[in-house]
Image 1 (cartoon, rainbow, N blue to C red):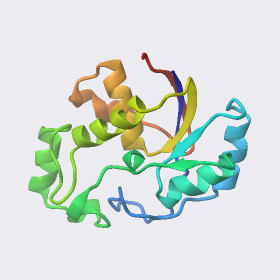
Image 2: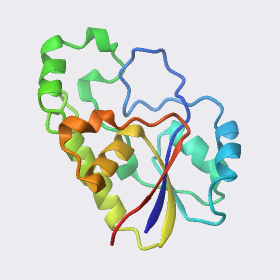
Image 3: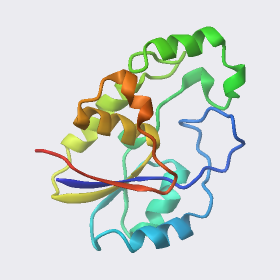
Length: 170
């Protein structure tokens, strides 16, 4: 199966703020869509995270997008909407010590995010699809398919509005 994984456009949020599940709009999804439409095969089914920064782009790319909560960004729990500098150092250190397994208070771990994203992909019954989602989802999926250890996950970086195409073994 071929998947075109697209990260949403740049969110309209002040730099330095932790956001995952915050439902914030993105900058100019129409411009990103125009660029992507020239790169993507026509007529592919499209699934998206339901958050606005993805939804707005998905609706520009497809007349019939489907939305699935398993494509949401990581839930940062009590960190959501806070400045990274205001998050207790001990919590950030705990996350750095266990990149895949640590869950912020009231949130989820990257490993939990990975499980739900893999569950979504396992349920796809199409030869090729477009998925509009978040960097965390793309990162954990590619880390799984590439067999990367958790300490290397942060090295996978994706630009806003970018497309990553991958062939997933069935």
